[in-house]
Length: 241
Image 1: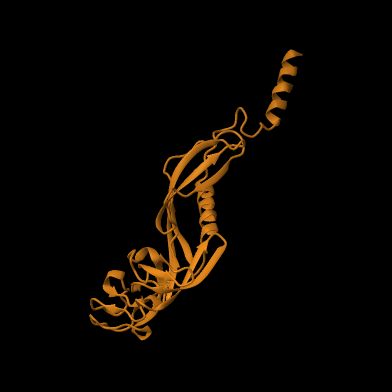
Image 2: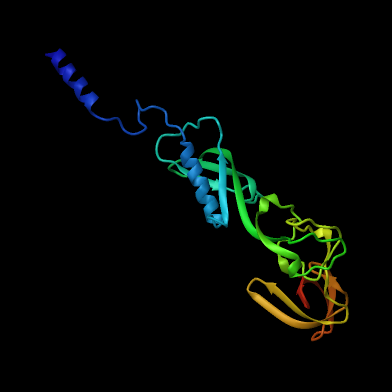
């Protein structure tokens, strides 16, 4: 009788499934596809992914297998300080348990391409040549392939002068051009300042000449005070405060 009862109990135990992650369940490891999908979601939320905009070319994941705790987990992707989504981009993936506690932190590397139209030489350009829109054509480029000082806007080259010759298809770097003066000493300029949602404009007189990005002194005509500002466009200065 006892043998029959024991056999019945064993048969019933074998028929009942074990709780997920409970005793008897095999070890559970982090799925690399889940990590890659979460990384893509993060990058997609930061950039406009798609043809002609940006794309994730590849994601390099750790080689070792990551053992997971019992129960559900959540993945959180973080950008390191001073990181940027361009070219080879290191990212942090944090694994959290059901209570939100950090279980594991791992590094991944995403290859991110961001495309934009930049001006390139349309024809051979000689040194000391003055530039205008006809000197260039816009061409789609991956920003990661450009030097950090590349000129990416056509309007920034209008009226500039080349310091060296350029071959067709070459991008222009800032040290290779002499930018025109956008503000001339003694001319009236538009002054504007931003602080949060506050936007202020005024009229001033330039006390210095300046190219784009340069800091110059301006006399505020209304207050008769001398202030400092940064040249942002022709006859326009942003106040620095």
